[in-house]
Amino acid sequence: MNHYDLLLIGAGHAHLGVLRRWARIERPPGRIALLSAGHEAWYSGMLPGLLAGRYVAADCQVELAPLCRAAKVELIIGQAEALSAVQQQMHLTDGRGLNADWLSLNVGAQVFCPPQMGAGMQVLAVKPFAEFLAGWQNWQADPQPMAILGGGAAGVELALALADQVPALALFCRGHLLAGHSAGLRMRALGHLRQRGVRVREDCPISRIDGDCLISGEAPVWRGQRLLLASGAQALPWLAQSGLDGDQAGFVQIATTLQSLSHPHIFAVGDCASLPGVRKSGVYSVRQAPVLAANLNAALRGLPLRHYRPQRQSLALLATGDGGALLSWRDYSAGGRLFGRWKDYLDRGFIQRHRLCG
Image (cartoon, rainbow, N blue to C red; front, side, top):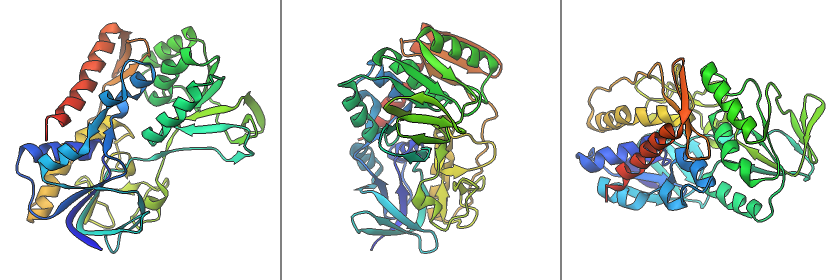
């Protein structure tokens, strides 16, 4: 069992921000490691642009080894299998065990998949990104009609990125399209989807997959052989079974210091955590990074912790697949190439900031 003073689990947006800050400023004392499933961290905001052919894979990745070297943090490549919150131990699928005095979780979430009966439909989840891209490459070799499950920002961006690459595309939403966003953004998104020939079904939750049919309630609503999952976040099974206090969906309940309510030696941020006022969005994970970096430093030095206060409003920029983007800020919405260039500038800036280290 390898012991660390601090173990960062997952290479999410917040942990990348922590490493970047430690690379520029002296990192906390002790033995620190980052556990990641791969050698690169994907930036989710650029995935629709990658699928639309506006980026190549290397544009959307941060190499972890140079960043970890600059931050003087050990990089461990492995797949998490189980976490014991009481023992503060992480077990990997290859049999290795890791434990630490302090742990920090930035592992994201998995997408929801309806119960499936039979093998009549191929199902591909948008996460993990590397597995999704490999599956999508296979699908591209033989384009067929496709459905996307998920009416949030991810589902809309994916639909607009892929609409011209498949013979027919349907987008299914559990509730309203872009629920929680401004009415203006929703109407603009619907207009773009209709112009691109995407069939949008709102208030149509999918209860199960039966052969090659999507079933809503007891009614078949779509027939085909390919389904892309971009739907609501679900807690990773090993996280829900860790012993950490979670919300009804299994996400780790945290305090404003970003510590677990039940096990304060464990921090959690991003989509795997649950804090009132914080959405499952990369925007919030990025904003948590400065507070997390400060609090991990304070924890290792025995100093007081800071409190994270989520922003009340967040800017939304949705790629439209043609080089443009839709913008929403409070009740204001707009769209066009100018906002696409702005989104590209922000996305490339995120990647470059984390490549400067190493």
